Image 1 (cartoon, one colour):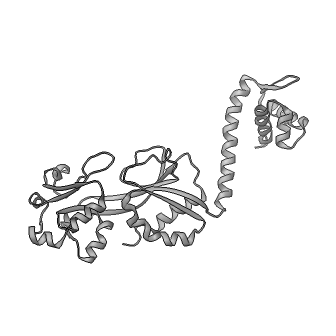
Image 2 (image 1 turned 90 degrees about the vertical axis):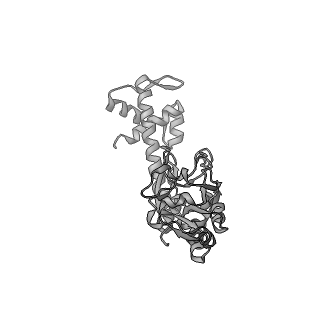
Image 3 (image 1 turned 180 degrees about the vertical axis):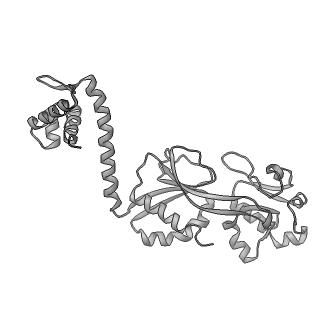
Length: 297
């Protein structure tokens, strides 16, 4: 640490290609900068700079040392900035990408977020296709399922369950399935992932993963809201997240079936670029979601 001032003087001199340029950046005399670099060279036992009457340039050893020192100083500046920002009030625009269904669980808690952080301006992009967080210029994204992207940091927000639902009118007309195998005698409403084009599997205890492929499919769509509406209209039995079906079940427009046979739970996470420092506004958003999302069933 006692050589840190010499390292700073060396890096500034290398970048300015002169002691005079470095002295102007550091607010020191050229002589003081030169002496500081000389002491560093003496300590290391190598010549870092090649001096001439007009300019200085890096030696081979200096080139290698400069690259490492630049990284260290950048890390120190980032650490200092992180601590300064930690005490700053969260403010500014925050761009977040989330699935269309996200408004069901996010919008109800946004008034509390706005009250707590009035200087944060949220810009929400609802899209069922997986966007590139970095290329799209998003600060964060809310995603479900596996998170294979190694360029993203993530924090789990909370689990949810899947339910099988149908309207009372449909169940009165077709009868209620008592076992998963009974679904072969029912009209099934299937969700197709917009990105991959694959049908969502139905995870049912006692049946193989591909069992749903043998169920009669009455309707396929790539929007969960439309799937729920189709179930409410009596078109068949739909497989959907519990938070999407909850209000309809409470209102009596949908009934849950085969609840004891459902095996799969879902998981939402918030992700952000790993190369991006967790700013006060992003930290506030992530912490708030971790605290409030799915905390109330």
